[in-house]
Length: 287
Ligand code: ARG
Image (cartoon, rainbow, N blue to C red; front, top):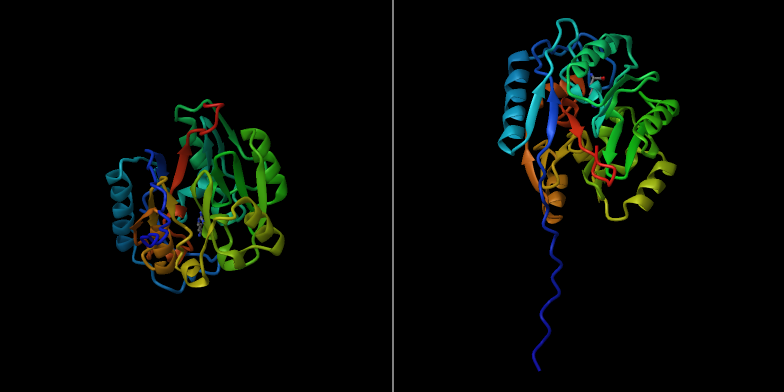
């Protein structure tokens, strides 16, 4: 009798799908105010380095088969590079953002005008405070919504009605992770990675129930902005410092693609903050 071969569990084969993104070159990036704990106006910013890193981000996304649309930045609006905050686009419906801080409020109309020039089925400006994909993550049959620092439950309600999708509200409790996209990343319609301590106990319970197989990141990965990554279903564009998370992504069959935007960290943002995805609707009501 031959001994049984050791049981091997194979990671699933992951498939990338081509995506369409919105980015804004950091031509006017600087840190002149502090609206999150990462920002220190006394610390010098090397804008040329920020632009060079962003150029690599853009080229990397394109090299992986994705389309990048760019919004022109505006002088005096140094955070426009964080285009994730410009709005939410799902299946031809778009909602442009309404910013929490007065320092960023003028970005809303700029992004709105840009969306108005796109081929969209419908565009609306958010009535409630809503910083776009900073706090809203499209996850197939639902939208995950962050609440606590920048966004309120009434914004979740507005988003759920407009996109006709349930919004699962998740309370954020650590000021370093003030937007949902700094604490959680959607890898595909059924897989997420997150840093549990960034969430209230109630939110942790919801996440554990919805995503029992989630990748759990530790604090070191989270402060590296590892969760502020971007997945196309296979490739995960991620901060190179998030080494624990990168190893876990590999084990689960994803292909981490390190992208360093450390100069933009001075504004409190990473890879995902620089990118808004123009989602297609992956359910049966294709739009
Ligand atoms: N300085 C910006 C702010 O505090 C950074 C935004 C980062 N964006 C994001 N999607 N997390 O609003």
